[in-house]
Length: 426
Image (tube, rainbow, N blue to C red; front, side, top):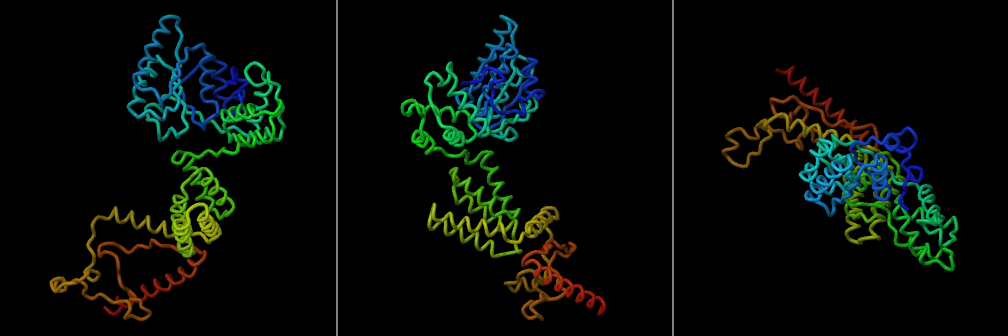
């Protein structure tokens, strides 16, 4: 069922519609090196074959899972022989190109540079992280998208009707509702759709692919989730941004997507604790308590019982007042610590556990806050002597930080008054 012409190709209209870049390359027969980045079953290999055929180029297909530098060198020799024999160029298609390490990727760069090979790579991983800059600078990246349910329905309809390459010669009947169910189960993967359809066709009942056959083949289907690749990080990013954006429903959806795909719930629990500090902070400190409690419940009860506590924490954080003031303050303080060198701790703030240290002035004139009015030593300094005082923490006008801001305003005013009074006394 692999498409032979662009008219048969399903999906990727953003690349293949009239006037779009790959459509122009197909129609002109003028190829350049390129990388196809997209999920499985979206047509990366098919597009590479169609592009090679459009310019009558010799086509060599390798998989980085099995191939090595030796295979690349053999492909180069084959390309040279083809050019010498009939003048044709060669397209080297490397599937799963991200499996090649940096030195392996470097192996074919000279032959791409001198025109011996037109390189087309396919990857499900982000090229920015998996491919070296030298290769990226010589190849254009095209992003392929998951097929829609409508796209896959079209593939299923074609496969059932095609008597030459599909199942049309078997004259199978399949209800439209069941075709839709199969298309949804394929989860954007055209190859998976055809595999499921083929299995279901083997379970047909007198030429009818019925509900029981479809239920059998889709019951074990799982949604795409790579447990460490781009899809993993995209989904945890979506979960985090849903919490930050105060969308409990969006947050629940992305958490459910990750759990359904096989993500370790303890990983989500760790990230939820991070969200509690990064996005809620002191606007509602209870958020951190609840996130930690959910983590503990998950460890005690395991899955799936503990996941309800995790969902509770996610929803609470999503509806809690938001503040990133703590993160901003921490980052600014850390930047100053890195940039300001090893400044001495003021003598009055130093520890003095021995007579020698006391003799050197450690702890001298330190004001014990609990002995002061309101347990606050107004006017005291807590920064290095050669460093101006900084204000890192700026509470936001939400949640508990409203009260914190009022308290800090009062304390800073008392500091200012005490220091002003001290100068007047001098």
